[in-house]
Image (cartoon, rainbow, N blue to C red; front, side, top):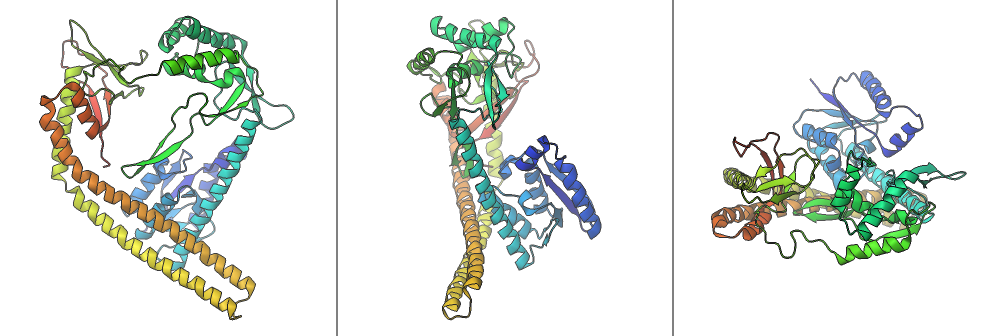
Length: 512
């Protein structure tokens, strides 16, 4: 018996349309696909609903689950309103999706056409559809970014999040929004600047003072260090609009695409005169920025010695804050969350270190018991065979294009027919080139994984072998070499009970 599923995903255009009363997208698409399934005599066993609107597979959990289920042979076909709903973001993601459907012989059934990956022409149409959707996506994204940039240059407020001290209002007789001062909040903004500049109070002191005063924060139930710092560094309070303050930076680490949005200092991003009213003077704002520049932060302080071997690696599992060490003269040293509002209970330093070492020993034995290198090499060999086929297809398309030039020169093709034929071949060549690039990147990634995994076991063995012979500072360096992040959680106090009643989630510095 054949098994089919349905994949539903909202585009950004759908989300915007819903705000103007166009109807709920999921319900509409599910109804259309259900009617299609009934006409084809197909029974839908499962519906995957993508709640988030991510551009990559990594940001779409339902797509990840769908691809995994297809690889496991659960589905003979997937119903989707159009192929663009599957992927229109990164080329490498499109290549992964195309490969999974092709190797699993899974059909894509849309409202207008059924794509059979075992049919050469259907597979070509499917890949061409993904290629075209990628081009459309990039064009739409460029237009959106140009529009946003122009609105910022015009001084409009283009962000959903509104800074403390203001409310967002619609501009009269034109598109867009600006900000309007909220008087009672504006006074608190002035209080924060004056307290920091004149009384030399730190972020934490100011946050605690505001919380004690019963002042409600804009997006949290309490004031935090980061909230105060953002107010002190945001040029919106001198009537400016910033752009690029947390610009996304992409890089590869151990073969994985990593995205980050580091905060930039004033002067390192673009600012434009806003249409809104300033709350503080530009002179005071610049003085505060000079104070920041003259007091750069240091992870553990220039003169402080590292005493906790896992310093900088342990994070609170509840709020995400970095855990800090709190020594006591007459009691055990504790590792605790720096967020005073967080309910995560502090833990015994020695017990935490012992559990980290125990977990690493168990992980080492697991790595030795599983021959992941052989498995990885087999996968790389399969990818390289696929790459050879794509290169052969690339050569074939190039020859077809050369023949098209010959035929037009011989008068067999008219100019119109040549243009139509050559554009199709060029599009196919671009599609194949994209797939070759994506596949080569995946092969490079797999080869890198093999190297990393081969070197990781001796590195981890070395950490455990010399652990007791080096200082806490050296132990810290050793951990940083094999551990990426440790998340800590403790929900029950144990003053007189066991000290190890906490959970640690350790992420090794190696792709699994």
